Image 1: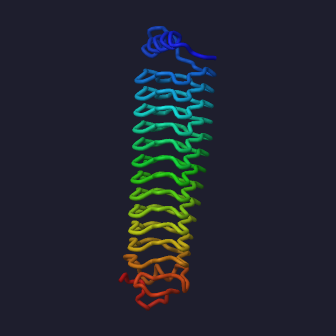
Image 2 (image 1 turned 90 degrees about the vertical axis):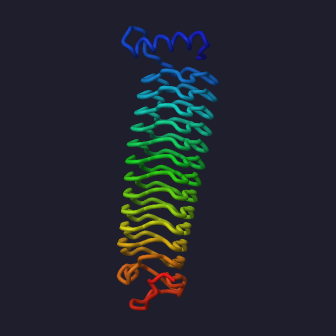
Image 3 (image 1 turned 45 degrees about the vertical axis):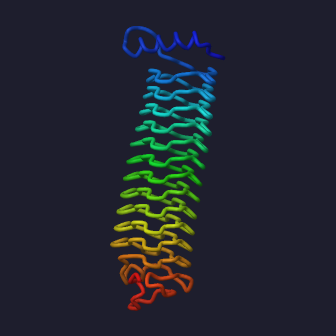
Length: 299
């Protein structure tokens, strides 16, 4: 079903009255085709877009708090600066969408695809995100503070300066991600894959990383101070000049890793790690690490 401009205008007017409890009617676009429609700055809080088709639609600056997009198709749609607080985006298809500087705080996002979408500077505070695809998406400066992420795929996404402070991240993939200066401080990460990621100067201070894979990742100058890195995999990773003060490294695997200049490591920490003759230790010598060798001291 297609919506004409006249019909849309009347729906928006009725919705405005409904929101202010002056009669009217809640906007319900279930199953309607809204391709190329103009909803710029529209007041659509609590609107229903279930199974709607919004290809190339413009919802920039729209007020969409508590709205429902279950099953909606938002491919190439524009939601720059939109307010999606506590919105439901379940089963959404939004490849190539532009959702920059948007507010998705407390949103529920699941079983959705945002491949190649642009979320730069968007906010996901306290959001619940599961089984969602962010492959090759742009999320530079996006904020996921205190959010919960489960079984999501950020492979090859751009996450430069993204903020995951105090987030809970389970079974998520960041393979080949570019996340320079990203902040994972105080986050809890379980069974996540950062293999081959580029994360120079990222922060994991006081994070809990349980069975996290950093294999082949670029982790130069990363802050791992006070981080719990139980059974973490750093196989062939670059951790030059990384900081490890008070980090828990029980069974961490640094075989083949380049640890040149890694800082604040102690004999006890390195003794708990796996190293071999392909490991370059903090002082530049080859492993495996031998206690009392002094190789834990950065050169």
